[in-house]
Image: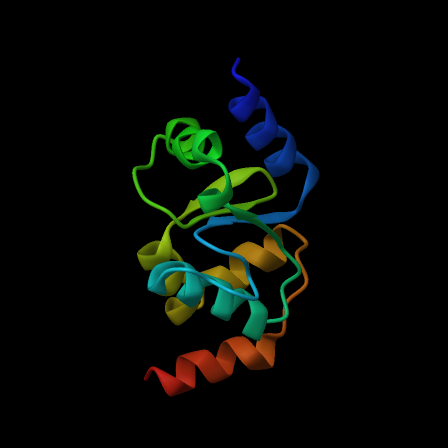
Length: 120
């Protein structure tokens, strides 16, 4: 196991919610990362952000770890959830609310409802 793989696994397993992204939750460096971080922040979900731009080994390593070619990548309770399109779809359909609740992750239901109302 590579150092990057071990770091990724440790991060995913030691945090309830992790977003591997370009930039940080307070300063995203791409539109897709900004969208997912923005949704998580708006829904008041506590999450660990990992800036893949700060470490090329992590940037490639996360793609290998998940067998998913793009970033951002969201993990909840150690499980790969998806990238920007999947997360957006799950939030808009209400599936994310159920997924978070089933996994014991606190979130602001009213904020989730506001996102759906604004995109209806």
